[in-house]
Amino acid sequence: MIIADTSVWIEFFKGSQRIFPYFEERLINREIIGIECVFGELLQGCSNEREIKIVKNYWDSLPKVGETDVWIEAGESSGRNNLISKGVGLIDSVILILAVRSKCKIWTFDKKLLNAIDKEFIFEM
Image (cartoon, rainbow, N blue to C red; front, top):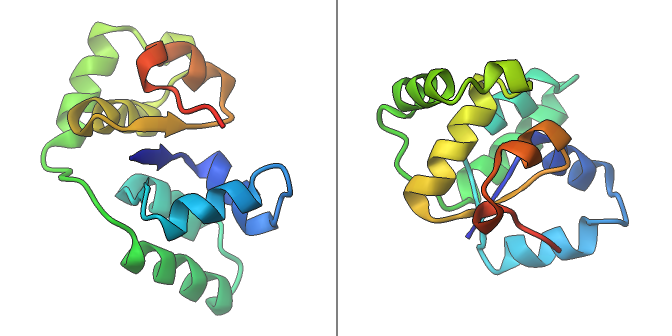
């Protein structure tokens, strides 16, 4: 299973040929996990009702993982590992915690996040 961060979703919605066919296949195979903070960021960037509807339709159709207390755990982990000084914010910390909890890979184009991820959790195309 794969957690795609916001940067990957944006490239998918743009129709980027670099990832679109591969990402679409992962979606069809139900390998992409929906997490709230990523979809919150996507919705924040929507410019009209049509875009909101598209994002929400993906949200509704994706498999999910348990997110109970994830923000607290992410804050503690971020503080212990001094992630903020490495350019890794709280949302990225949530992604890291959910990947560890659910044994998922993380698909991201964010170099700072990639540097904070143990190699075993990095998704590579």
